[in-house]
Amino acid sequence: MTYRNPPTTPRKSATFDDYTLSEIRRAAATGIYDIRGGGAKRKLPHFDDLLVLGASISRYPLEGYRERCDTSVVLGSRYAKKPIELKIPITIAGMSFGSLSGPAKEALGRGATLAGTSTTTGDGGMTEEERGHSKVLVYQYLPSRYGMNPRDLRRADAIEVVVGQGAKPGGGGMLLGQKISDRVAEMRTLPKGIDQRSASRHPDWTGPDDLEIKILELREITDWEKPIYVKVGGARPYYDTALAVKSGADVVVIDGMQGGTAATQEVFIENVGQPTLACIRPAVQALQDLGMHRKVQLIVSGGIRNGADVAKALALGVDAVSIGTAALVALGDNDPRWEADYNELGTTAGAYDDWHEGRDPAGITTQDPELMQRVDPIAAGRRLANYLKVMTLEAQTIARACGKNSLHNLEPEDLVALTIEAAAMAGVPLAGTNWIPGKNGF
Ligand SMILES: Cc1cc2nc3c(=O)[nH]c(=O)nc-3n(C[C@H](O)[C@H](O)[C@H](O)COP(=O)(O)O)c2cc1C
Image 1 (cartoon, rainbow, N blue to C red):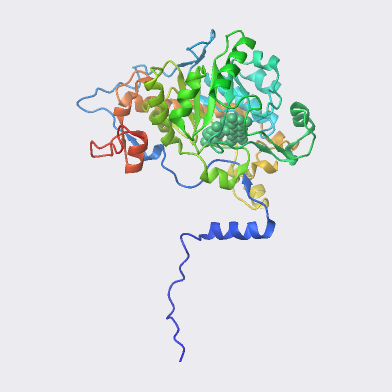
Image 2 (cartoon, protein in one colour; image 1 turned 30 degrees about the vertical axis):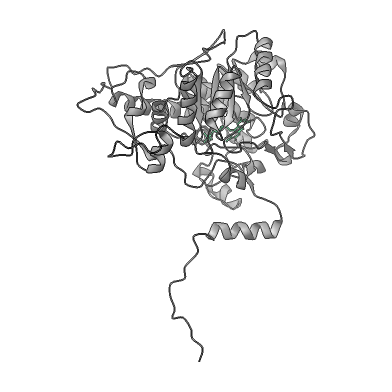
């Protein structure tokens, strides 16, 4: 007689979950790796793992309706003759023209300007839409040098030397042929319709000593007027911050692994780099060790969504944050109103990430002349400005509750962590204790 197990509820493996199984099948069927846009989708320690304490007997709160809470920030006060003054400490991150449509770039410029902040170019150069509608525009100087020219360096208000991105530290960009229109091809001086892979490292320097020379060159071209930012992906934030400062940066930008990208290998997005939360404390520590905290400003990005995230990042010692994905959502990306179109692409609003394919129903991550008409730059810009305003008000609400008359007076003492991991990464006590795991060593 053969023994048979009595029936039980079928149990799926946590290791080989449905998504993993479908990826194995997809790889087996196609022989190519998956490329997508967006940031890491797996659950990672994040700002949600921190809580703000608020005032109590030892702290005195400010009244929201009559007491000021300053939100302005100055970026580039170290060397630049013309530092940047922003009304809010939330900037728009660099997103390439090519990955984004012209109307989307215009909308970003309009929204940022209405809100009193800056926007940033990206791989592929500066567009007139963006320069024309951005009061403050940061010009990216990237490994690919696509679309780079000295005239545009001088037309910018600041320069951001991109060493890496949080979604792909050490990796280069991708722009697939579908999105290489005549205009994109011309700006990049590359052929139309052919997949482009941007370089992962700068062609003319290999390390911090060369970076110092490059920064000096950029300062000379721009008459020492423009602040020079250095942007790195969140990999080794302590040393990268220290080396960027040594190389002469005015501003250090750290992009954590939740940071969005236009197109990168899925395996890269989910497995390379450190969570945004884990990058902040080492970067601030590096600035403090060099006596440069608040002299060289620190901008952090990667998964910033609301005013609470802003307040928590600032409390940890950051001067400003930067947003990419959230800004695109404010413009209309992944909006349920296009659900039928998302379904046709085999996905759903909220999950659409095939930004490299150029078929974005919302008209944002596309070069398709018809689809991009779906973005009304004026209305979308207004939505972005509204969103930035709400984030700022939220951050102010939190700061006032902590008794702070400036967002920049928030401090680590205003925070506790919900998990041991977040406590160790952020360097704040675990809630209900005075224990900071791993204090004095990271
Ligand atoms: C569509 C898209 C295009 C991007 N293009 C660039 C780029 O050209 N250069 C760059 O440094 N970063 C680029 N990034 C990364 C952003 O500058 C930023 O680091 C990231 O989006 C921040 O994370 P968040 O999207 O979670 O806010 C891009 C991001 C997105 C979403």
